[in-house]
Image (tube, rainbow, N blue to C red; front, side, top):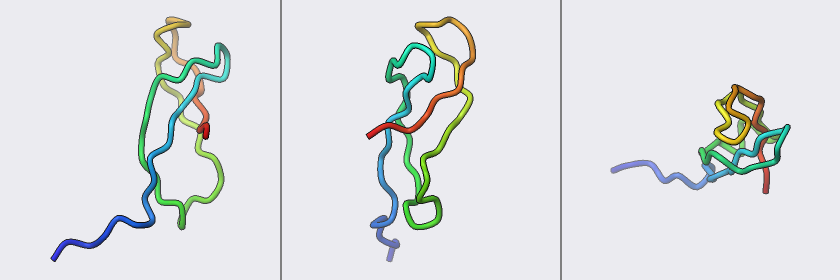
Length: 55
């Protein structure tokens, strides 16, 4: 049987410079309770920028 995915949640990543919500990803809430931040390409800014988790 497959394990249940009860600890993984879907989060939205927003650009820190222009505040546009570009990406969605999942994270384990139990292992990473703080907000995640990734450097991704922002299509609005047209450059790589840090994206932070939003609600």
